[in-house]
Length: 326
Length: 265
Image 1 (cartoon, rainbow over the protein chains, first blue to last red):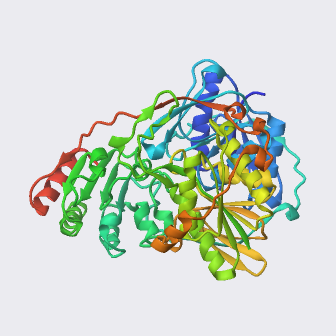
Image 2 (cartoon, helix red, strand yellow; image 1 turned 90 degrees about the vertical axis):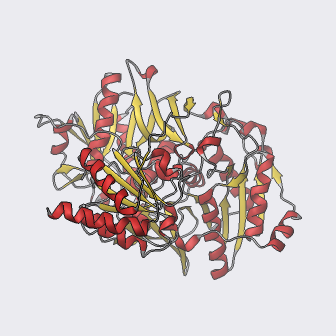
Image 3 (cartoon, one colour; image 1 turned 90 degrees about the horizontal axis):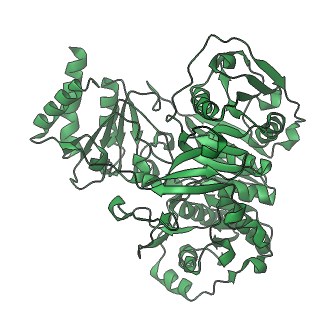
């Protein structure tokens, strides 16, 4: 048993951002453990682009049944790859895919599991390996050590730097046989609804403006959308706002929702529960606008405005427009 | 339709950070007499179960693994409307990671009789491993759908709306199935009525030991865990917030100046 294997995804001939982040984490592990990095590729996509990111071997299950996501079939294929590659550590993204597959894969491989990893500390051998993750909604930080291998770990999106590209163009592709049958899929996708995002994606935005319970209703988000449009940013929300149905769940920023790491994060009417703050720890500058001077959001903000957002946002939007215009 | 909802009792996660203390011995949060609550998403899971029962008839059981104090979480479950409740409690369970807890839940679910649906919160309010629900599914040998916002019965099938990064998916599955539930406007937990709280306080709640459910102690506890918690600490975070004074126009003007200095606008 040796090496680090990442569950990779290649779209339009390039590894996805989330795959590059996994490879970033994998190389950190590989450097400490002195072991190679491999990738698991499921479905009919091209492996070649992965070699340029330090992947030595690509284990591929080439089946049309894996082109679209279905948990049971993906798990069966992943299990086969893990049996063929015998990695010490399997890395998956801590997103909807990894949250669906990681625990069940660990169960099947009789592996240990560490989820939502935000950092990896490894000096010389597997004995020094530590996974770091948040606990108690971000109020605490836990250091977790393996007692045995293999380990399945999920890496929190937007916390690891994407792997850098090299000139390497070749590597070894190992085809892995997985006897898949459509009848093994116990769940069936009926419909996929993509929410329209106008402009930049929340996870990619360099400016994010989020609203919470303090907005008092869905209308408050109109101001945020306007400000986001002016600053070419994206709009997010706290769980309170998505739970109230003011905006869709996909806009949620926080432990359960998305992790964002913009240059500028503006929290409007957000109390600052740790569950929300856990999703913005990568933000460089945090501005909080809240009518309650005691709100916890001010404990993490760099700049704070105590006041009613309805009287603060209109002049802010106007000022920003001037800036952009001039 | 037989529905089992797994409830975990935790220390109120809404407690302010200033009151959060770690016990270095157990490497866990110090209880310090703080209120104990049902882990938030587990309440959403119970709400989904109750709504399904209202639509299609059925039987809802609240099941928990924990110390004897966890009976109060189950009482709240009964007060909200669960038909029955059971607690799995055994000193051998102490130090169990998610695999041990899931093994106990799965065994308890089998003792209750074959379920149609098993509902769990998508993550707990304390550790948020997001592991227990899927492992219960694996142990029972049934499918699992994670991060479900709402559930609908469609003849013999169940349709689940799963929230993903850029929207949602509708998955269809024939029961039995484990669903892990996310909070959503459609599943805001109901408040129990006073008379239901009173009634629930008189209801017997069986407590099962591992031998009652027929689970070997070798399947639970710290021993079976393949990872160990080496350290738990509170990150130091000094408050550095600079408050901008004045009327809104002045506040905004200062803000813009500061943001331009930082080159973020």
